[in-house]
Amino acid sequence: MGDSEAAADEFGPPQSLFEHLNDLRKRLVWAALAVVVATAFSFLFAEQILNFLLAPYTAASNAAGGATLQTLRPTEGLETFFKVSLVSGVVISMPVILIEFWLFVSPGLTEKERRYIYVFVPSALLLFFLGISFAWFVLAPAAIYFLANFMPEVFKTDWTGQEYISFILRMVFWLGISFELPIIVYFVARVGIITADMLRSQWRAAIVIIAVLAAMITPSIDPVTMLLTMAPLVVLYILSIFLARIGQRQFERSMEI
Image (cartoon, one colour):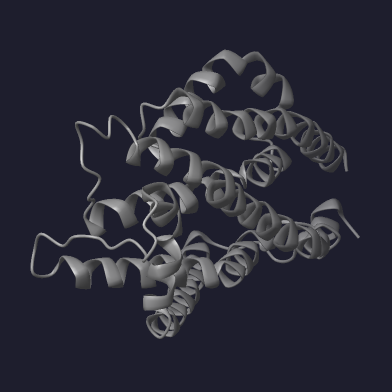
């Protein structure tokens, strides 16, 4: 058996550009369908989720009877309701999204590497929910308390539903996505796009990008909240360097075959 035939057995038959695009379309359709179904399911619990998201605001404003949010436009409450349901649907459907992503990239992997799905999906989910937990239990209380009690003798804390819920959802969701950085870096290194040396040499630029990302996730001028956001991202970047080294070595070994 020739080298090309052996490679075909190991990687599977090569796909044309049209087949790649068609496969991408199918994966996106299944992922979108999972989001739609999960979002529809989230409609049933949107009110409970909204009340749950109010917990940091209630604690920060010391509202014994529970805090409420203003709506300044006729459709603002409905828009916030749908936004909460959509983000909840994306979170619930994340396992399906990750599986569809894996199924899309798996044709370019060897038969042995395809078994990594049993590591990839659980690890990505673990990091995603770890990021959500960190944002909810550490960042959100600190940020909301600071903002709600900033110069109380001058400013009256009475936020609108859209602004507050968007703030919380952006912080929690995007930090969860950011925590998946090590997994993404590993697979990018595994296909030979980046190397560990590249990441290590660009650490200064990475710190700046992390600072910008932290500012986008938690748009607060509170330096404590910014540092709390940056700290785990810096640790994840360091972890990404080690994982990139592993992925790089695996890529180099595959090129030698």
